[in-house]
Each structure stands twice: as structure tokens, then as C-alpha cells.
Length: 102
Image 1: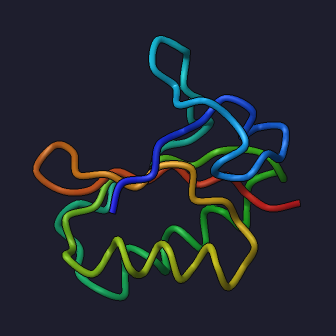
Image 2: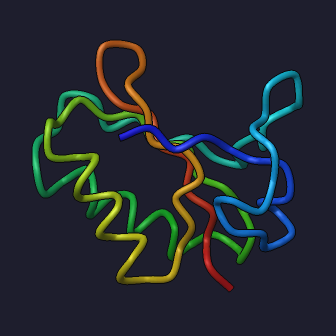
Image 3: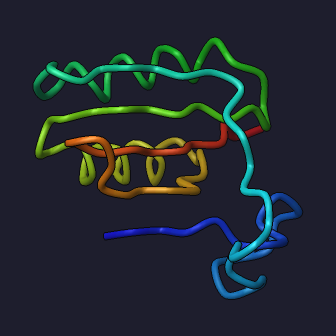
């Protein structure tokens, strides 16, 4: 699964509410969490803990190699109300960009 940042996403528009970020500047993370090499459930637990310490609206970039990470990060966001802005294969693993819920 690959989610792509879309123009208008930071203003609350849904996935179909904006244009794909081709040529635009995608939202930048406020913090980065590198959990590459860690296995389930550690990546999602560390992401949850880091997000809890962040301010609403801040974005966390998570780098992971655990094959369960895509499903785990999606479930984390669905359960907590955080927004999964990006979920993609990157750098020999996965990259997620999560915006903390208010």
C-alpha cells in the first residue's frame, strides 16, 4: 500500500480532496523515529510512545524494516485518530509519515 500526500491534506481534506503532490513540497516531519531492525511489536509501540509526547498536528517520520509495520502503523492510526499521510517502501524497508491527532 502506498499513500501519497495530497495538496489540502493539512487543511483536513480527505484522500480525494486534493491533488497529488507532484511538483509540490510534501509536508516535512517534525521528528524522525528509526526503528529499522526491530521486530513486532516494538516499532508500533515506540511510534505510539513518541506520538504521545508530540503536540497535535506535528508529524512523525518512522523508518522500519519489520514486514508487519505497514499493517501495524495503519491500525495504530485507525485506533488513535492519527493521520497516516505516507506509507511507502523506502531505503530497504518502509517509511511512514504520521500526523498526531488533536
